[in-house]
Structures are given as structure tokens and as C-alpha cells.
Image 1 (cartoon, rainbow, N blue to C red):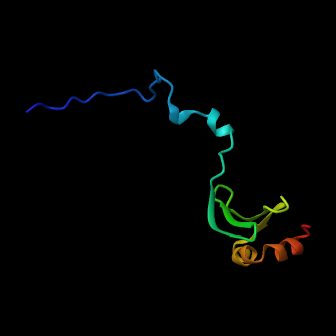
Image 2 (image 1 turned 120 degrees about the horizontal axis):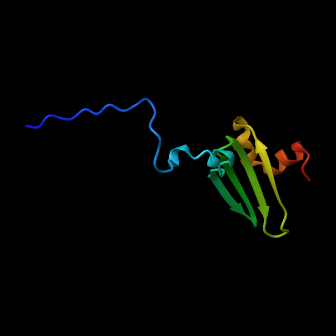
Image 3 (image 1 turned 180 degrees about the vertical axis):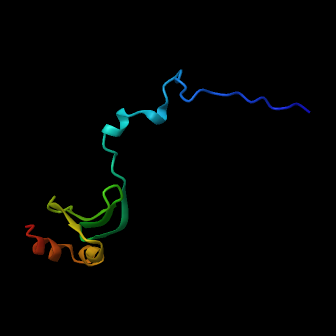
Length: 98
């Protein structure tokens, strides 16, 4: 049986190659948002989606009318998300969106 060898290392070791975990340049750039679709419905040419921006922790209801080409998004609180998803035009009117 061989005995393991113990090597003492000085307090600070100079790296010989760049460490990808110490790449401070990437920290300056904002992370790409992670968007998750929680629900979607399509009726009479109107597409309504309930989206969660996981990066910013924001919930958005997105509406697109294929007939007219009109679109809008409403940022809502979590407690209002399902109601805004079911009645996006009412919430848009309440928020002042035409």
C-alpha cells in the first residue's frame, strides 16, 4: 500500500489559464430574460397569452388581434393575473390602454 503525498501550497497561487468562473466581463451584461408561457387561449382571431418573466418576476398578459393587427401587453400583479387573462380588454381599459 502506498502512502499519499501531502504537498503544501502557498497562500496564493497564480492561475496559469483564465478561469471561466471568474469572468467579470459577463457580469456587466444583463442576463437574457427567461419568459415562461403559463397559459394561452385563441378565440375569434384574438390570441391571449399569460406570460411570466422569471428573470424580473413580472407577469404580463399579451393580446394580439389577427384581424386588425392590434396588440397590447398589460403588466399585472400576481393576484390579478387570472382575471386579467380572462378579461384583458377590461383590464386594458382600467389601465388606460385604448
